[in-house]
Length: 172
Length: 284
Image (cartoon, rainbow over all chains, first blue to last red; front, side, top):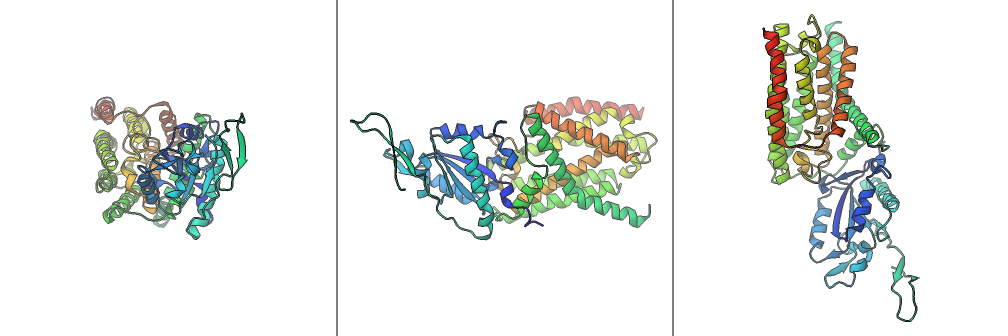
């Protein structure tokens, strides 16, 4: 009986602000509002990693919080998935050049889904969480994480000569 | 109805209690979502949640924690059996209280401060509501002249008509036991900014599922307890219980969470006065 109901039907999400500017966090909380209503997918926002299935991380990782991030990740019982929200979680984003910034969170914990954006729209976040929740079922039978592809489109700051922003495609 | 028939019926009601409790929880979540103008989860979401938790990796802080989780469930089922068999009401109260106490001990046996705070609050809640339950049983004794829960069915008038004030006080107890606002202070699905999850913070996976199932049984038990107030007709009793449960959901959405001390003060003044007045009226 228990195998007919998929574990992906009730992804409980714990949200960890790793070094974020709060932009992603505010957009993430918008998912809970009546307009987006994540609960219709069975998603519950819990405050405790021990109850969670999905770890949503916002912000880049630095020397101070890498240990905390690892600790939160380790406390989640298997099967678990990690969703990296926003561009900071994949490359360090606006903090990338900071003296203390280590870069993306994939340097500390295995990431299943990257959701690009600064910040991503609530729809993109919902897509990311649901894609991650679908992985829970396969992870239950075959543990382990296949490293996710990073967002391919990267914005490069304008050079002194040419005005305006140019988008270049970089292989991550 | 023969003995075999009634035994079968009680066994069926006990086995179905977790499912019924989960369905009530599902109705609660859908209704709450509709009140907040959301769509809400599927009706069977609490069942999906519990089945998922049962299949998660078991992580424990210490072994005694598991014993208390199972004791919580076992005593809750025993209390339900006592209620359905119409057994001694004081014994029922004792077993029901010990079930909650197991949960408190489970919360106390770990080092998490949130778990300890949740347990302490649960003890304060017990202090707040137990007198009302005892007054309810004393009132039933004054009506039926015995302490058997089963004699509510043979009472000359439905208990709701002889004990209306006690019923109102009991509704508040029901709100506390169902962890509804303004009384969801010991453990709450919604208070994770202030209490994380209170008592159940250190439970995860299958052991959290055991506590969830115990709560479903508790919900069903409270539902049957309301039906006791109109035990002569199961249909009216059922409708009364449905109306009470609906009231709980509306109150849950209309109130903010209040403090433990406020709850104790409220229960020991307003609710206790109501229940005591009713008992005094029956006694005279």
